[in-house]
Image (cartoon, rainbow, N blue to C red; front, side, top):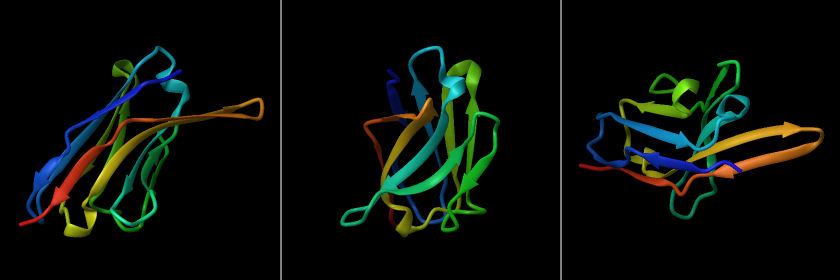
Length: 119
């Protein structure tokens, strides 16, 4: 079992920056692919960024060049640095931990943190 706790959301003006953090419980953080997803009102949850156990990143086209994902295994933490924020980035952002082994998927979610981009 993995518990995830996000922090760092809030209200920011367009063009501003925010940094999200996700702290994971347990001592096996390093074996999980970590991701950030978001869900805006009336829309489906979508992948924002993902980082593998080896550090390979996958960034959604809509945020490429503006958002960066990083992980610090020693602190069981994954980060999402968001720059040049736009109103359309407004959503609840969720942290995700995922791994698959022997044909079984392990998928965990945080409770979410609200990001609002507005003037």
